[in-house]
Amino acid sequence: MIDTGTLTDLITQFRNTTAANSISPETVGSILQKIVDILATAGTQANLDIINKWHEALKTAQPAITALSQGNADRNHVYLAAKSVNLYTGALADLTPIQIQQATTERAGAMRAQQVVDLNAARRDVADIKKQIQTINSLFVIGTDDNLYKSSQISCQVVNGTLRLLGAQDLTAAGYVPYLFRRVRKRNPFKDKFATAEQRAAKKYCPVKKGWGLYGSIYAVKLNGSEILFSTNSHHNLCVEAGGWSADPATLVTRYTDKNGNIRFGLGRSSVSLTDPKNPKKQRMIRLVFGIGLAKPIYPGTAAITPANLTSSLATFTIIYDPGTARWCFGT
Image (cartoon, rainbow, N blue to C red; front, side, top):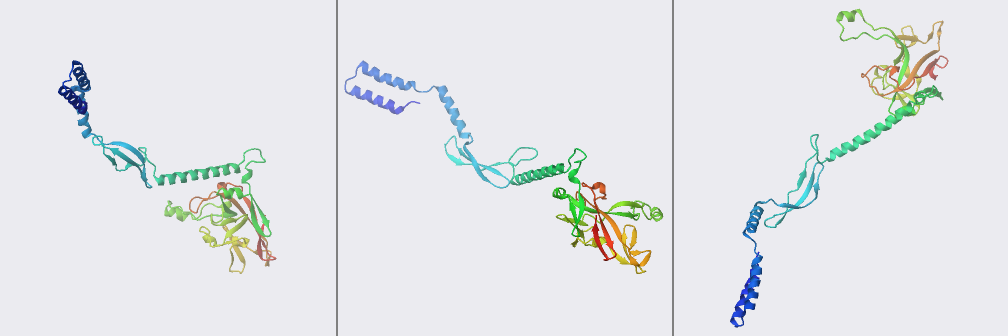
């Protein structure tokens, strides 16, 4: 673009030189050469057309972003603070905060705060599972006969009249719970809901079973350290949480007096009398065998529980009725 101020100064200089009658070819030539040099800086029409096109384009151009920074954020969104400039006027402005969309299963995006909470919780759960797996793996040492399943072996011991369970610490730490079994002979009523009325009338009972039967449920027994405690609920309510706990072996039997005045207690399908059949005036010694083992929690109504469900061995103990003291005590 021509500097018109400089060109005006040269014309004024030329006029002053003429007025002073000091003009010479050299002076005129010098002044004219300067004017030509200035005119040489003028753009061509093609250049002017390009500039005009840029000028028109800038009128309609969108503002350009000049700066981006982290904006305000909440639990669900991330925002960017942006500044812009108008390419035509040069005016600066703050843009509306730019929201980054949340991530979904279909696209990438920003993670919500709750997703971070869930991810951290999942990480902790996985770590806990790994610890439990390590504990479980340590319980079952596969090798020679001396250490085969060594850590799953438990046993009962009577200490000062209280029943203790030995070797169960690792299993209880891994989340396993105790179950109580007793040797019984039982025959459950036939209650097949898919059977016809004729079938139920013809078959009142299931086959007789002998062996280890579950005593109550997961709520029938618990461990206090190594001490074994029994639910004080009635035998008809051992499938609900215990109202209390006792270490007394008499908790495991329910006594009643029959019509003949004999003290009896139920044992599976049988009813056992404490009266000595050879001497009705005396009572006899009774020994009942029980077993305790550990398995994962299985709540009432979920599945039938047998010793095959146990993770540990079955630790046996006995309760003995002493007619001399008329009391029950533990034995092994």
